[in-house]
Image (cartoon, rainbow, N blue to C red; front, side):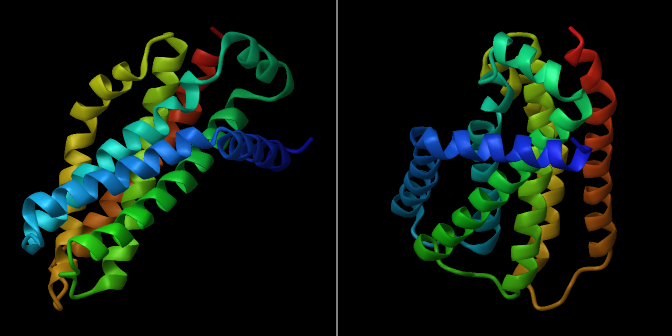
Length: 219
């Protein structure tokens, strides 16, 4: 089987498991809806800076809940089976792709609920939509890589959060800075440079995952 077909088969496997274990998906959706509604009850429609900060903080916790389980759900017997039918590179790429798609969907849903409950202070909605997809992708890559480490260490998802927060804070601040321009009709200077920096960080995480995961795979 070709590499592309193996990756697609692994992504389809994760998608099938996600649809069968619907309580996990519904739990994440309930978390997004309830958190947004509580913020609405507490603050009404906040100003644009608070709106932006709350959105990305919630995305961070959504990502921890949605992505951290990706490797922790794979028991030792199942990992041994995957070891016999695929390579470490294909396996980790499939996990990265699936979690990227999952987190992008969750981010878009969060954006929809935010605009419904907390108003829409955006001057450029398309720009914020682009940053939302890019941010969901970036957060998922980092936490997928950390989940791989925690999974092989046979630790709980708490380890993902402990390792992830010091790493993700600079990325989160960068996302807030990039998305902040969506509240103004004028694009700020250096905006594209910050977008390229974030994309470069994503490429770095994917490269590290492809290089380092085989060492965990052999353990």
